Length: 98
Length: 327
Image 1 (cartoon, each protein chain N blue to C red):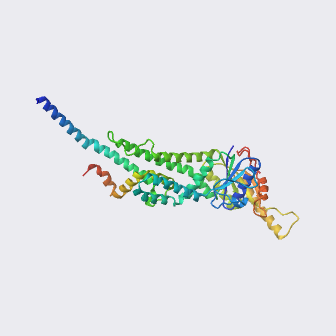
Image 2 (cartoon, each protein chain N blue to C red; image 1 turned 90 degrees about the vertical axis):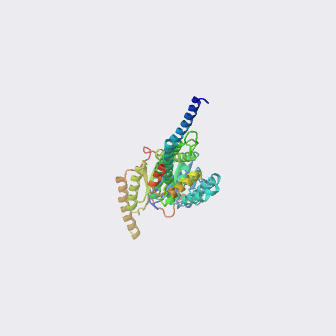
Image 3 (cartoon, rainbow over the protein chains, first blue to last red; image 1 turned 180 degrees about the vertical axis):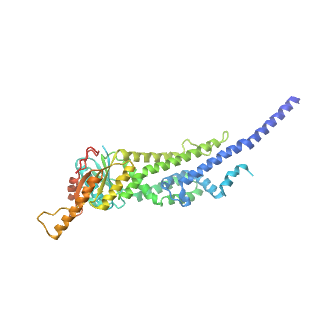
């Protein structure tokens, strides 16, 4: 095995690790943040649709009820997030993975 | 040509009488007419001595006239069943119970009745091509004003929901790394689809009310009724709905001049008071008085309805400000 191929192999290995590090440190947290934001917006949407789940009457609940059959995933995830959330600080802090 | 004609006013002033008489008048001139009651305490059936349901049915012994009484409870039930059917088609059994509870709850809220009424109301306006004139006998002022303000308000709500939904889907699409499938996709989203359909219906209703509807208020010659009329005119105006005219009902007939008994004196005094109120209506309130209808000896139905119809000077062919002659 020549020296150049060995160097080439090391460099490939290094590139692989660097990409992994970049993904893990930068890309993924960023996308995770966007996804969290998406979930938060969806929670607002769900709350606007079904405020009577919290005892707040809504003038449009009759119309939003017909959306429920198509909101299965959202509804499930929404309830889960509502139950799991200790505080807004906790939710926003999750991205730092303490 | 305005197709939809609404009669409103305080409770008990004679909205059903005046609207039935107007519908009869239209039908007698050969216009295909439908009279619709949106008042939960339906009384068209009583006027025509015939049972009407949520579906238009021909009025016996009168050509060109159909009648219906909107039944919001039946509509709520139908909507509930439809939603539940979609639920069992779409949702996994594990989630059904959870969602089911939410759906039941939504159909028991105070707003459900109004929403169902609104839905039927829009249905009637949309699917009424076979009629040239639709006369609405509405519920007492408060309820009707609220109903008429609903399209705008609901449109605003739906707008907000659509905006939020779009925002979250957009974020989900951005959060999908590389070739990963986003958790929600904007294209063909059933939620946005349904919300938009609803919005279009409300837009249609709002547009129809503003451009193809005429409003008349029925009043009695007494102070309470006149004040309520003024308030109703103001409120309708705030929704951009213009009142075309006032129909004054239950005027006391004047006794002959040679009569001087206790009854005659009472009637004369009563007539004087009413004349004062009537002047007030003529002078202080903008829309013209288009009918002055006297109290009848018995309930207004059958042939008496025809005589009332003759007293209405609301134009039949064309209900627009320039052709309404004041009475």
